[in-house]
Amino acid sequence: MSGPAAAATPAVEAERTLIDRLWPDPAADLDDEALLATYAFPADRPWLRMNFISSLDGAATRQGRSGFLGDDADRRVFDLLRREADAVLVAAGTVRTEGYGAMRLDAAAIAWREAHGLPAQPVFVLVSRSLDLDPDASVFTRAPMRPIVVTVDEAPADRRATLTAVADVVTAGAGSVDPARLRAELASRGLQRVHAEGGPTLFGSFLAGGGVDELCLTLAPALEAGDAVRIAHSAVAAPTEMRLSSVLRAGSELLLRYVRDRSAAV
Image (cartoon, rainbow, N blue to C red; front, side, top):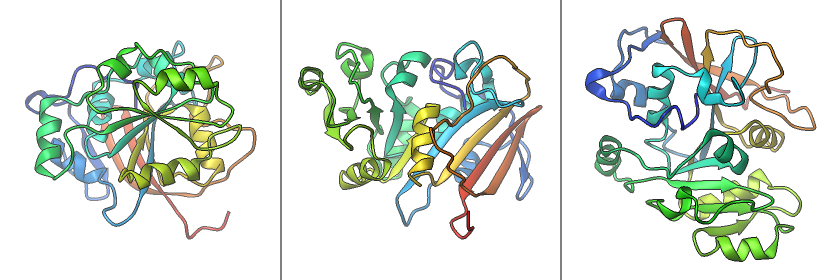
């Protein structure tokens, strides 16, 4: 789905963008509860979901930003996907590129979470090897929950000390972040349902580490050409079999959900 700059305006149930379910169980004009049920996390185990948008020819961005590929339907689902999460995971480069501010759910989302026994807000988790992050940025200063910054042993000690004042800084690897260690660290804090919003290098590393359980992919009805990156990038190939879980449609746009097929031999 598209980035946060495009998702600044919360979805309003009374004025919702029309989204139909094509498969399974076709249904027209899904309300928010139906969409939340479609994308619900499994209740019995830790889970990590990746969330992306792509053009028909595989571009993950338009003019350098994923947010420019999305429309109202994509933004509506983008907002709803955060609602049930314990943590929202994003690479620091994506935070800068997409213009993330403080991650705050709207009043309707807060009410829903509290009614379902969840904290009012999910925890924002940023991944950065270099710790090139501004402690005065709104992602820290206006955060409703203390953020977590995940880094590596080699990260500069001075930047680590500075960020410790505004976030919990944890190490999950030597030269690169180990997806398994990151997930274990979050789980140890009770953050088991992880919703990840990119970018492509983070996605690629989690694929290579076998750490992806689900992909939510908006297929935008556009062709981009150019040199835009794919939604996943890594130095090594990481074949990962996925199983289609649902297909939604908003006009000519498709919103696809895939879960990992752990029974498949790759």
